[in-house]
Length: 180
Image (cartoon, rainbow, N blue to C red; front, side):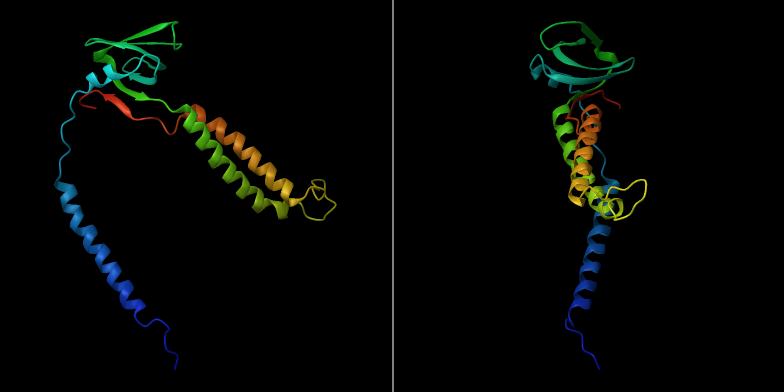
């Protein structure tokens, strides 16, 4: 007869599962009955922005990524370039959200994610792409390390090209129109 090495493990796992279920079921009613507090009008938060801060403005008519210029009780003004240039004026009643942008952070994160994915794909494809055969696609002259490096480089470039413009790590929302 075989004896288990850890006789307490199954009962310990059962205890952990029971505790997790109890915690999850105890928190569901609390979150189900909790109501979100009403959103206060945060238009005054925009007044603390430094001129030249890059923001994304979503409005009822158009959206723009521009450099913050000024704000008052009725309008928000931003420009195409940090110092000057074409000014865009948004009436307060049309502004849906104002968010900070993080294009640089999104680009760097995209490069890192892309490089990791490219290295993983290169490591997986290296043995398959560089076999010792005489086919038309014979990459046997390339070492698996070169294919791994090419995968990482291609992923790095593609990740940066996708991550930056998409701004997938966009900054916090500074203003959201009440009722949205």
